[in-house]
Figure 1 (cartoon, rainbow, N blue to C red):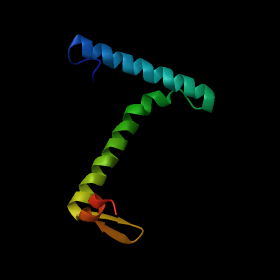
Figure 2 (cartoon, one colour):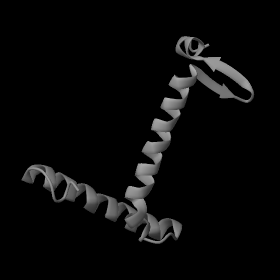
Figure 3 (tube, rainbow, N blue to C red):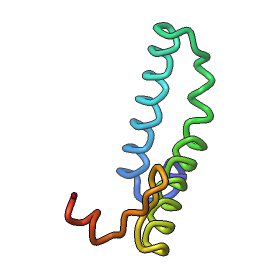
Figure 4 (spheres, rainbow, N blue to C red):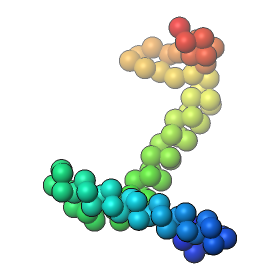
Length: 82
């Protein structure tokens, strides 16, 4: 969307970013024998990663902490880094 909306300088920066991502995927495809078409699903994977992070924050805040390996750690303990 950034390529089509906003001021011209923002569009240019988005274009540079897209070209950089394409160049990175093209280079990595030669090193690791992956398809350069992974470039096309990059936005989807980025959105999924952001969604997982938001989901984690919402669950931790709504439950007042997190559970790991059967032990519940309240936010107070997590903030103290104990």
